[in-house]
Structures are given as structure tokens and as C-alpha cells.
Length: 194
Image (cartoon, rainbow, N blue to C red; front, side):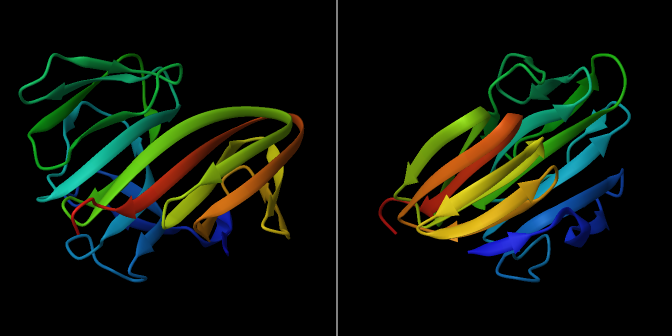
């Protein structure tokens, strides 16, 4: 179990230089944008434009704040993505551009190296007690809004907005939120056949 406080997230420029990203976690630790196996980050998108290309990478995008954007992903119909929508998965090496719906947004970006790892992202609204289980090799709980206490295999940890925690699987987690909170549960696992 590794606690990742919001105050420790790393700010860095986008790969294409068009903005700034806040890296929540990367594996292996300290890996560059061309060397990571998996990466979880947030970014503020303030204008329309192209996404950075990441060869051999799969990504999932979720809107954290703002009115959303329309993604133009080569080979697909335009995809409208807002806070109300489920996370959207697509290849990070396909030409993609974004058109903001009404003002800037903040997104959550999860990326894994295709053929080596896979990932799945769920947005969860939690109030009271909620149980999660995962067989994935690695899982992350990212607290987006509110606060939550996690009991992970007998270890307790409190997360506030912006905090995250990575866990090794398989795992069973009990979440306790005294008031409504919003979380993202990210599962990262070895690709089949590897």
C-alpha cells in the first residue's frame, strides 16, 4: 500500500508542450513519458487542440471538472465526454483532438503499455460503507471529491480530495465515507498471453 498525497503530485509539461499535467503516479517510479509501463495523471485543458501521441499506449480519459469536451478520435464517431459520462478508453497512438464544450476542463488520464498491461477505470459515488474487490496486480483509489477512509486488508488510510493510494492485488477494500464522495477505482493488470 502506497499513499500518494495531493501535495506530492508532480507537475510537468505535456509531451506536446501545449499545457501542464499533474502526475499522480507512474510505474516504474521515475519513468519518463516514453518509458512508463503505466501512468495516472490529471491535466487542465484550456483550449481546443491535438492530444499528445503515445505509441503503443492505451488510455482512458475521465472529466473531473468543467463542462466537458468533444473528442475527435481517428476512425471513430465524435465522442462527447462530460462529468456525467463513464470513462472513455481509446488508443493513445491514434490521432486525437479535443474541442471544449464551454470553457476549460480538468481530466483524469490513465495510460498503460499495450501488450504488456491492461487497465479498467470506474467512477464511484460513495456514501456510507462500500466494498471493492479486485484480482488485478495493481489497483489505485483516487479521491476526487470529499473524503473517505479505506480499510485495505486490515490497513486503514484516510484520503482527502486529490489524494490517492496504490495497492497490490488481489485485494478487498472497504470504503467508509461519512458524506457523499466521488472516487475513481483503477485496476491495472498483466495483459493476457504475457
